[in-house]
Image (cartoon, rainbow, N blue to C red; front, side, top):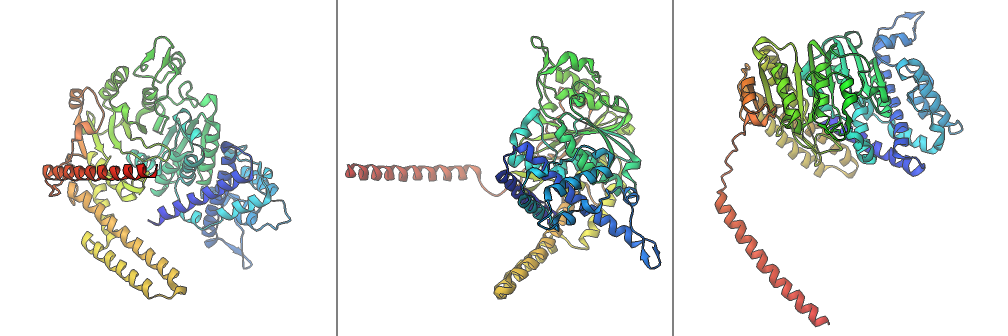
Length: 591
């Protein structure tokens, strides 16, 4: 709950800052986006720097009663970015009015680049084009504690939000949009990366790398020693954001941008057949891809999709991407990617490629995702997973999950999976893989988080808290009312979180029990054999296999209610006709 509030506040602050830039300059959206995000990057880098510095100083040796200062190498060992004093955010915030702020920010960006080889030439140094008053206001906006409290792919999420507010034209170019954190986490959770080579051939702002790094680090390992990250991103602007995002999370990567990074025509890192993991959210439904050039570039183990004989162009590149993701894998590799929902049962050449793909036995999991998981587009999508080293029992089986009705509503236009919902979906995959101990470990995590609370007790505690809040606010003086309201709202939010955890636990155990035994659940999940998939013309649409869950009887007689609605409508029409007659008479009297 708190994370959502903080993220939304941060997004609102970014909106304010962008408005300031727009009002104070004559820049286009693409010109002013990068300077704002680079300042945000610097602020987040500073937050991480201070956190690591405090950790280092706890165990720092001393000489003559003086603690030895930290060194850049100390931060590198912690996979963090070292910031010289003049590149630290509080230094810039506290500069006196008589010092040229634009030059100071340019200097800060240069100093940061000197600390990171992969950032060389990436950060903007054009801040002298803005007035110092404007820059000070931007620094003030980003100088808030919210940034110290948010982890994960913050730049990717804010960049996506920024595009949705100011640059929809940029967002729609070539179908490019950026992957929400919960979708990326789902990809990572199913793939469970540990070590090896990872590629994202459409890497955008780098969210796949960041979440993979978080997953590996959370397992007690170091992402930079365990993983080697490679990326391709045709749009150089996006590649710059990717490199910033990786640097602020202490990740090293080899990112190629520009024409040579166009994955339709180039395997920029020569990684076909060499990847342990492939993750991506490619642009959907791209057309006009040159068939001859794509064919010459290879990585098409199942052949080309449909080609227009007249133009010699591929009309929809979805199955180019799908083929690439498979072709990049080594003999034990795993792939997870986001794809347009239509690709799961598209016809003609797509269907032929899909048949060949299914017959490899390497399609592992298919997940349907509902609407509104993206800022800029409301369309549904699907998550595909390949595994070339599936356990023998699953070699000729595929797990289908229909999660279109399983999500948390953020607001009217945005849905996501909560952390516990992500764990529940991952638990289904664990049971499919025979990893019952991981399921039981999740149940233990639930019990630890709930500490004996049930849905009933959590609901009672929440109701009691709301009543107490109402009473305390009513009795409070005007001076104390805001403080008490904030304190009580925080307590309420905590109890709402407990209730949600209890509900998610019940959702899981009601289907698979306390000990965890996989069963097909109508409307949610089913393990299908290749023979069953063949019978459905090689469709990979989860809904075709899981069926539709029975709807609970709400006690309303349908035919009786429809008769009531028709009667109400007839009465309303009658009243409308009377009103129209009265209006007509009044109008004639005015003539």
